[in-house]
Image (cartoon, rainbow, N blue to C red; front, side):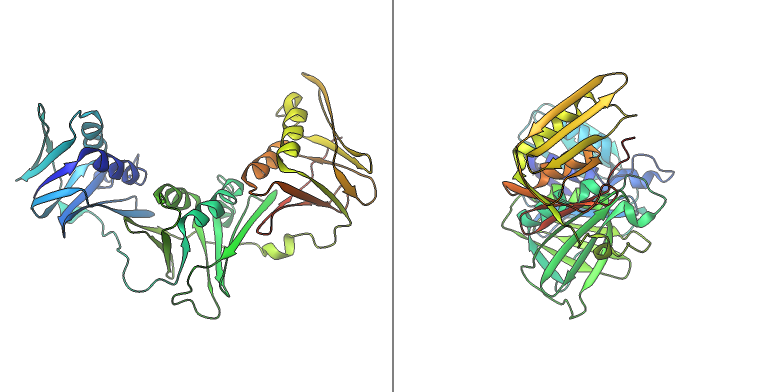
Length: 368
């Protein structure tokens, strides 16, 4: 194998693939990337056995096709520190020679046959979504997924495609985020649709792969895997095991009190009221009346805060406490200038809505 690569494009491909490479593993082969030179492009593959990626770099000149397995960290470091616009990579026996104008590195290779298979995208997609829209949906849900929960289904994001609609839903048991959109194309999706719980790591990687908001991202769902495909990359992920909670049952439907406010102004008020909270007193008291909203917090170690916020409020007066971090995280991903917060009682969840396609359920906190 011998290729001449654009260094910048090669570094970008290695950086993306490097997010999949296993950091610690008893199998050294999983700390490698597989390079395949064929069909006028260089394809870089990586896997940790849970997530796998194939990233294609067309900015290459292939003088001799072939494939090689290289340690990901050393190879990436060489490419990153190089000062050349182009680098040549030539494989001779069990060594890869990486040459610039004033440098020559030799890296010992590993057996390509030891590398696990990395799936490619074949056939027609089940459905597809414009990249920019998918990034928005991921951004509006991924933050609310659990980091490490014993309820495994909480560690991912539920993707539901049905009736030309796409829903992404996440929860950690204390809040729930849902974002929805229309599908660009249905593909092979049947009338019963499809759904899967996708690990947070995989969606983070998909988000990084999208650089053209107009280019569609194609999906294929299999029994225990999901495949995402763009013109430059194919990412495959195992699915999260477990049963996602019936999220539609969690969404409050009997709210009789509603606050309406400008998104940015409400976010500012919460951030200011939260300045004197601590980990032990992580809550902001919200008193809603016809006159507006008063936000207060207090901490024995820090002091007290009071913020008066002008807003529109319909319904009977109510006082409720919320975790301010949970509210600010949701408000940051709202894509509308105005939000509404629907309430029922101090011990019942609130429902935050931003635009037509985003809603967020948040449980109250006890402020005794």
